[in-house]
Image 1 (tube, one colour):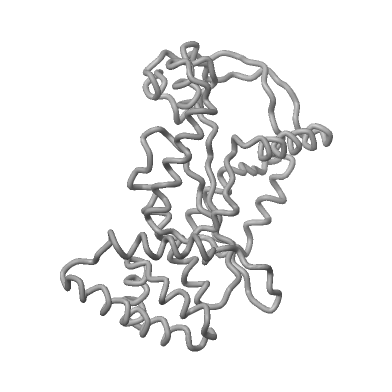
Image 2 (cartoon, rainbow, N blue to C red):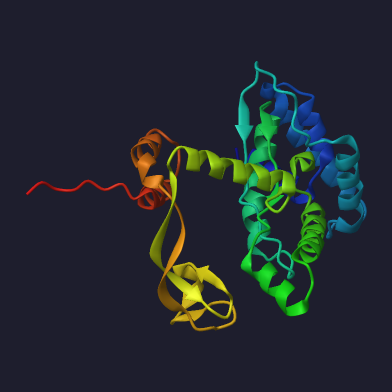
Length: 282
C-alpha cells in the first residue's frame, strides 16, 4: 500500500500523462500495477537528465500541450455501465493579484481525487469556473475609470494561465464565469421562479451600509465598525431590499443532510446555515 500511495503522489507531482493514458487503457483491476510501472518508467526518463532535479521546464509544457491538444480530461459521454463522480472546486474570485497559495492547496487535493477515480474507470466531471462578481472589481473600475468587464476578463485570462501551468485535470470546455451573459440569464430566471412561487419579497430590514463603497456589507466584511476594504465607516440602518424565504425549505434542507457522507464539521455548518429551529410550548 505504501508503494501505491507513493506512486500516486509522484504521479501528481510529475503530472505524467504516460501513467494516465496507461491507466485509461487498462481495466480497474490492473490499473494499480500499470500505474506504478509507467510511473517508474517516467521517473527513469526524467532522472536521466539530472538525478537530483525534476525538469519542470521541459516535461510540464510538453505533456500539458499534449493534454490540451488531445482533450485528455474532457468529460466523456455518459456510460451508464460506469460509476460517475462529480468533483467540483469552489470557483475562485479572479482578483488582479492572481492566484495565492491557498488556491492550489485546495485544488491539488480535488485534482488528486479526480485522477484517482479516473484510474478506477469512473466517468468524471471535473470543471472549473470563475466567481467573477465582486466589490473589488467594482471599486477598481470606479477608481480607474475602466469598465469592470475589461479588467475582469483580463484577470480571468491570467488566472487561467496560472492554473494551466499547474497541470490540473480540468475539463476546460465546461469553463464558466458568473459574469457571462449566458450564465447571468439563468440566475435571473431562478429569481423569477422564486418570485412566482412567493419565495421572494421586498422588506425593510437593518443592514450594514457603507456610504463610501455604496453597498451593503456582510458582517464578515466589517472590522471594528470599518469596512475591511478601504477602512470606511459602516452604519446600521434600515434598507428596503429583496429577501428569499429559504426558511420555507428548512425542513427539506435539514432532512437532506441525513445519510450524506460528509465530514461532521461540514454537516454542522450546513445545519447552522439552514437555521431550522423548534420552539417550545409553555
